Image (cartoon, rainbow, N blue to C red; front, side, top):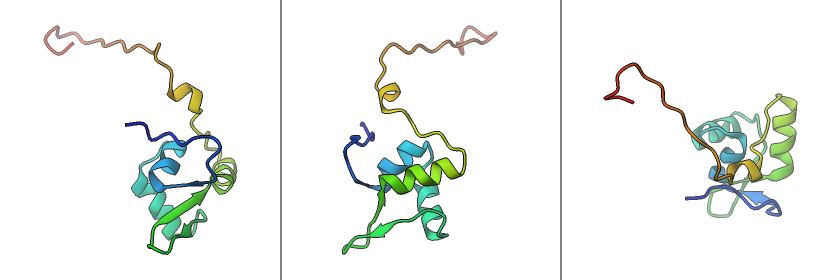
Length: 88
């Protein structure tokens, strides 16, 4: 499941915003509840985050946002090293 928001999307869901910040959605919701990051509340009671607010929040705290192009790479590899062949 791809949780990456499109770059032209103005408002992001908590899952999309958390993905960009590389944190869990529950962390993002806690930050919003504490007033650390601005969130809009929909008529249904759901939080939505302005992309610009996320960028300002991340910049102010030295957080690098996930690069959408890097998230779609398919040439990544994983190296597993273990001294037990059964676990490797």
